[in-house]
Image (cartoon, rainbow, N blue to C red; front, side, top):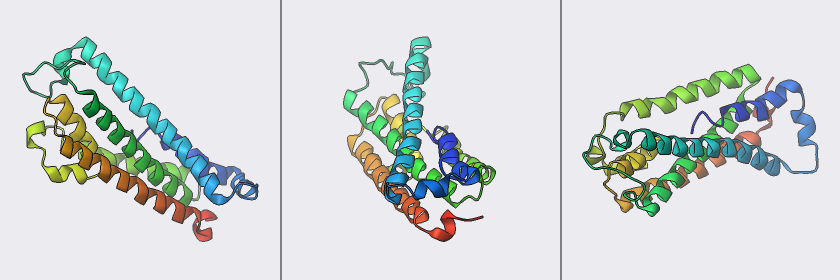
Length: 204
């Protein structure tokens, strides 16, 4: 989900700065907020594609080996064993994660002076996102604390671990979704702030 929007985010702001097409874009009729929203939604779209790819990967993984999705439990998981509402909430949480990182990626791309500098920043972002994934790799669904559903990235991982582990707690899923929505709002505010700062926008 994090990686999906990086190529688009790198090119849409830092890439345009380097090609000298960004300043002319700002002189067109759409206001700055509209331009930012268009770029943000484009990056988000790439993240959505990543989420869809993840879901397809789960389906293929189940078709090949159903036991690979039991998260170490003895329960057999099938499409009918996962409540549709729980699966929907988990997907929405994953989409919100993509939207959160889309905001961060646009902000970093705006801050960068060049395409290469943006790539450097965004590659570090990818590493930062991988750390909680590896840190919780061996955590079983029953060991996940309520507080983990409020932490970015970890809340998404925990949501999927929960539904694949066969133990559904809608309170935790809703907590993860609401906290994810808050993070989306925060990153949008940060991206908007970057986009409105002339010193940042025209760094050279």
